[in-house]
Length: 187
Ligand code: GAR
View (cartoon, helix red, strand yellow):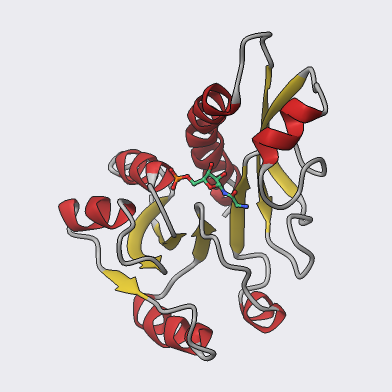
């Protein structure tokens, strides 16, 4: 199987990155992680890139031209797909158009419900019966592209923000790899 080169964008803990790195060791998994882009020099996720000798690039998203810096870097790696894995910066329409249908994002809710931030707080406040995560194509509208994989679980009476986050992230790790398998199955 010919593996595609993926670039993973992160900002924080990097549990989705870690899970993708583990999965990509399997020769049947459709991608290799060729590059990690991070906009937070203190992000734990960088350690996973370092430990696994994956090149990483620290980008300063306060800089107006940060997307050009990313594009320059990405060009060297023949990237087939960009995976947004907790990248907490909105990317521009221009950048998205450059990679049409080749950027995917993981979001901690059952989209189209609870787009944006503080999803767990809002789910609890609304007394939802279930929640979950969504992997979707990134389009110019925030958290609105076509769903690739969605996973759901029922909320229990004693669930709080912390437990919802833990349960959601467990599902996210499965959902992300399933989405990549689904995308590349027909290539
Ligand atoms: C994930 O739960 C992801 O769904 C969320 O950030 C977390 C990153 O965790 N993304 C968003 O909220 C995007 N709107 P990780 O750094 O441990 O992979």
